[in-house]
Length: 325
Image: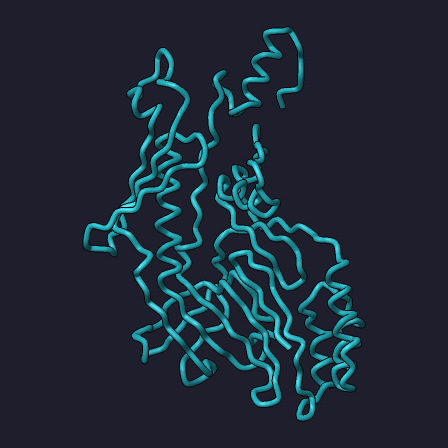
C-alpha cells in the first residue's frame, strides 16, 4: 500500500496491492489510526486495514469511494498581506482548467499550490521549518542523487508586450513600455546558453524580470534532485513525514555534507520485505521561492487591468456608480 504526495501539485495515488502474510496488521492499524494519512475517518482507515488482513478487496474499493466523495477543503498557509490581496481583474483563458487558473493566480502572488495527506488544497510558500537529519548509513537506507544541468540556461530573457507607448509624464522609454524585456542570469552556467520566454499576458519590465527569476529558480530546483528512502512512515517526534520541510542531508558518497534540502515529494510504502518505508524527493529550497509578479495597470492608473478596467471606465463616463473596494 503506497501513498504519494507531491509539492508540485500532482495528485497522490494508491497502490492496492498488499502482502499481509508477514505483517502485523492490528499493530499497523493502531499506528495508522493515531497518525491518519488520509481525509477519511480513523474508523474507515482501520476497516480498510482489517479488510486487507482478511484479503477483502471490497474494503479497498470502499476506501477509494470515500476519497472520491470527500469535499475538497482549502488551507491557506501564507503569512503575507500582499499575497492575500484580492485580484482587481482576473480573466479565465480559453480552455483553461481550474487547476491551471489557480496555478496562474498563485504565480502572480508568489504562492505555491499543492495538496496534503488529508487531500486538502494547500496554498503555501517554501518552508523553512527544520526536521530530522538524514545520514547515509544510519537512518538513510537508500539514496540516489541526480545532478542534471540540461534544462539550465545561462540567460533567461522574458519578452512581453504592453498597451501602447505609455502616456504623458512617463519616465520610461516608449519601447520599454510597449515591448518590455527582463533578463536574469544563472551564474552556475558558464557558457552562453540563452532561453527566450514569451509572456502570456500584459507585463512590464519589473514583471518580466520576476518571471525570469522564477524560471531560473525552477530550473535550478529541477536540475538537482536527491531521492532518500528512510525506515518507517514517521519522524523522530512521532509525526508523519510531510512536504515542505527542510532536512539536513549528509551523504559523503555523493559529496553532500550537511546540506539543507526541501522535501518536495513524499511516498509511503508498505510491503512484506521492508515493512514501512518512506521515499522522499529532496531539492534545493531556493528553487521553490516564487517571486510575486506585479499586477497589471489599467488605463485609469488603478490596479484593475484588461477588460475590467475598460468596463469600469465606461461605467464612470455614463455616471454609473459601483463599489471600488
